[in-house]
Each structure stands twice: as structure tokens, then as C-alpha cells.
Image 1 (cartoon, rainbow, N blue to C red):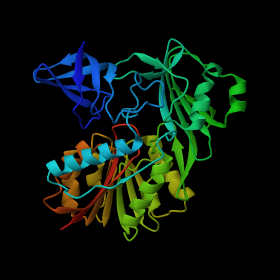
Image 2 (cartoon, helix red, strand yellow):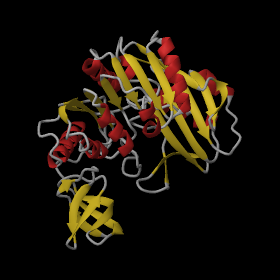
Image 3 (spheres, rainbow, N blue to C red):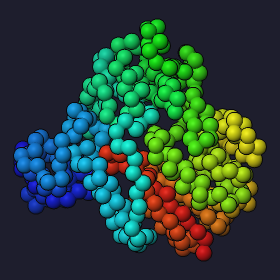
Length: 396
């Protein structure tokens, strides 16, 4: 055990202090905290610590509303105010982009409701108890409520005894109409009590991806666009901020006629652009089936979707388009995809990213031929270290 004073916060939301001449990173601490810590990892030039107790709180520290915050590995920043978390994200982004010589202007962040915003959560079940793993471990933190999850999800969580099992995982999703879609991942046989269905608007239950009740999908609606979303299809987890992000993309591309939509999911972003012809690529089969259905639901005869990995299929598609939407996973875009996009010489690329680090890495490959005309952030994941960015590239 040792005492450490936190001097600043790093890009992962961890407090930074110094111990025995080395830098030490301590999660869930903030500037000014004097804390008692234990060392969990030690390397040549740095250490990682675990917070044991706050000896003297810094001026920025507040009491987290979540009773599990000190143990749970979900949220990173509930020990500071929401406004302070936004300021930290803003400073983190501006520092990252300025150091990379990509953007030296102020970055605006669209703010969100900071509690009860998540429309999807994945819960662990261990020895009949339900919760999340603690930070950087597989130790279960049993919970009865999640402060950042939709109220309907918390109602389903409260009724765990009505569908309980011993070991596995549960994914719970809720849509705009408060309807529930669940997937149980387990080797066990699950018996769900009838009263559970009378208490909740359950539209579908899957076990290991196989539908056993209702449908394996539900419908979501954003800005007047209707989406079929399967249990394993990606969809933005924050409905409130998604509406703002989608409207931003719509305004950026409303005058484009032919758009290539990479990592298109269920057709989410492309279908927000009225009148445009959309060609989408997605690797998840159910998502592509959803996208095809969604084009029909929204009477879009000019939308076409292809199943496959973007890096291997993109070069086989017609390259005549006047804009590209790129919304990749956290790992970013592959070199093969970047090479193809550069060869297309398309006038506009709208890159949506949930990982600023890989966004910066990828943008460095475009700046020889493109200018960054817009960089804006959306707080898709309040009280966590994550933030969503929209970046517009215009060909010189």
C-alpha cells in the first residue's frame, strides 16, 4: 500500500500520479485526490494501481450515484460531475488531434442524458448471481440496478428470479416502444416463468442465438425511419444522442446522390439520407438481412446491400459514388480499405468513429489528398471514457 496524489487524468480517464520515481495510473481517481493504493502491475517505466480508499478527496470529486461504481468495470467517470466529464473528453480530443497535427480548432461535443440512456446491456451470470465484471478482472459485481441502463432494462433485471439460471450471459435490448428482446448465452436449459411475460412487453427471446419465443428481432424508429434490428445486429446504444448524430449525417450528405455505406449494419445511417442511392456492406448476416428489410419498410428502392468483410469486398463494387460513409468497429479501417478509398478519389468521406485513437491513425492516411472540414463529437457513452466522433473529409 502507498499514498499517491493525483496530478492529472490520462486519455483513458485514469488518474495519474507518481510513486518511487515512476508514473502510476489509477482508475476512478481524479485531480487532487490523495489516495491509498495498491500496485497491481509494474513495468520498467510505469505502474498501474488499484484505489483502496480516498484519504483526501480532490475538489473535482463527487459522490457517485451508482452504489457499485467503485467495484464495477462499466463506468469510468461517475466520480466527477457530468459537466466535468464532458470537459475532460473535450480536452482529451483536442490534445489528441493537435498532437497529431490534424485539427487545431475547438471540438464541440453534443451532450446526452447522462443516466438511464443505454438501450442494450450484456450481463454476466455466475453461480446464479447477475451483474458485471469488476475492472480488469473476471470477478462478478452483483447488481440489482444499472444507473446508465434504460428503466425498462432495470425492470427486467429486477425480475431475474423469473428466468434465473446459474452461469452464462444475458443480453437485454429495449426499443422506442419499450419492447424487450433478450438473448441468453448458456449451456443450461432455461425455464422462464409465465408471469415474466405478463410483466414485460417481450417481443422475442433467444437462447444461444436460436429464437424460442416471439421473434429474433424487434423494430426501432429514429427520426421517422423504421429499422428491423436482430438480436445480434449492431445498433447505437444511446437513442437520445443517436437522433442528433443521424441528423448531423443527414445534413452533411443530403445533396449527395450515390453513397457507399461501409460497415452499414442494419442500414442505419444510409437510410437517414432521403432520395440518395445507397450501396451498403456489412459482415454480419442478420444485419444485412435487416438492412434489405429496412429498405423495403421505408420504401427505398434505391438501396442495395452486400454481405461480406469490407476489406475484401469493397474493391469488387462499382466505384462511382459522390460520398462514402464509414462507421467501422473500434479497430478502425484496414489498410486495404483505406487504399481503395484513396483510389476512388471520392469527393466526400464521412467517418464516424467510437475510438478517437484509431480515427487519428486512419486519418493520417487521408490527409495527403483530403482536408478535414468538420470534426464534431457526440457523447454516446456518458460517464465512460468513450466518445463518438464525426469527421468530414473533402478531397482537395
